[in-house]
Amino acid sequence: MMGWTKREERRSLGKSGLGRRTSGRSVSGACISGKFVSGLLVFGVLVSGLFLSGCAQSNQKTQQKKSIRIGVSLYRAEDTFINNLRSELEESAKVYEQENGIKVTLDIQSAKGNQNTQNNQVERFLSLGCDVLVINPVDRTSASSIIDKAMTAGVPTIFFNRQPVEEDMNRWDQLYYVGADAKESAVLEGQIVTDQYEKDPASIDRNGDGVVRYVLLEGESSHQDSLIRTEWSIQTLKDAGVPIEKVTGGIANWERSQASALMEQWLEQYPGEIELVVSNNDDMALGALDAIERAGVYGITVVGIDATTAGLDAVHAGKMLGTVSADRKAYAGAIMEIATAKALGEEIPEEMELENGKYYWSKQRIFTEK
Image (cartoon, rainbow, N blue to C red):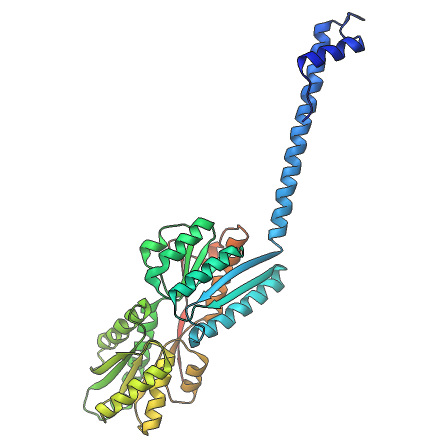
């Protein structure tokens, strides 16, 4: 920045003759004039610097808006529901690019059911400069490690499908969750059976003894959706007055093959007793159907949750009574809406109506053959 010292100012004034009294102008007047000029020069340099700095920031913001990078870690890519949701997320990113002219890079990785692997993936995402993290936690109770890393890097994070505990979610105002209300899913699943029983009791109570005997297929014991779906699907049946009696139940970890093995075992242990299969998700319901078909047994009612492609096919074929669907397109769209807004430093649209400013619940509906 250019400026004059007092000595240099006097020397310059002396050489120019401005320091002598001429035409009624005094030395002091000239000094004031010189200081005024010097002040103008300093002011001009400062304004120019601010203008250039503003331009740099504006240019940087423009560059940021040309592309965004989102790191996505799935607990297990082989999970049917998660895989379907992944496809919707990729489609949502394409639509966003077309509508906004901003390139979206989705770096999608599978943790393969290993929390340490997922933690390493998060570190990689951050080292690559991802603008936002989208995490489907392996273990929802271990989300604090991911949150620590995200907070340190200042990168907003969206969890989905597996809800971290409330204490963790409240640690930072840049944490979000997108999911389907597990209680609503369970109540709707129970409603499928209730509606059918009220319409035609004999279609559920096959032996006509006035009691519907059921088995229950559960997801992971540590997953909040599994616990809530288990409780409220059965509670809904009880509240509606459906006369039910539990034969047995077991944990099949959301997997078709594990459910098939359990169902095969139960059919052998309780021949002719099972009339209803209540499953925490479609994959396990389909596993039960596999075992039922292998055993050549007929008349067992099966219900699930998720409305996966295979699950809907089974419903349309009359093999499953019904399933419950979260709107996957809206589900993925909500993730993308929050992620792009945070990546661009914008406010999340008010119409999303986030609960407590953090939670987005995807709408759900019943699917039956009719």
